[in-house]
Image 1: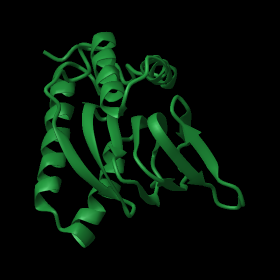
Image 2: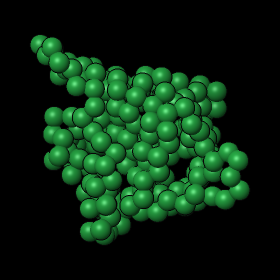
Image 3: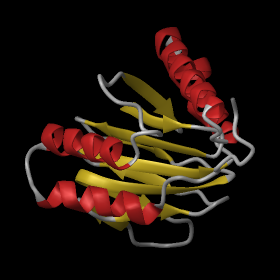
Image 4: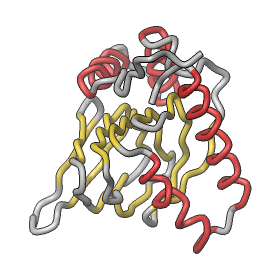
Length: 194
């Protein structure tokens, strides 16, 4: 049964930064840090973060390519690990949501319209993209991040699918992304999470 009160937000950007900072401080390679973050996210939010084993999928959006694993997907929030072992560059997207990108390993660069300098985010730093804003970004080499978005998550999906339809034509990636997202959104709705 769906409860009468449906929580909309169960995560916080501060919580993401805290979990990331703890994992980064303990050290290790990217795999160790990412696995530590996933375990800590599940320990802190067992009802809302999908336990392992992890399913990784490619993600092509805004001209950039990386891979991701979905820790939580609902209508009002998502939490993923996103990154690349070889670097990538593209458009952040312009969303009806706020987005926090907490670097776990490597470095992310960003360029805001009108600025002549680049923003540099390193392990432990949190890059905030406000509702309705957009930037150019680059991961110059290996980079992994804990990404948290809060807002109208469904409105973000076309950005995530557009490159698949008009560039990569990768039906496997599209199917896996839709399947994972729909399963998690449905499961969370059944638990009363909007």
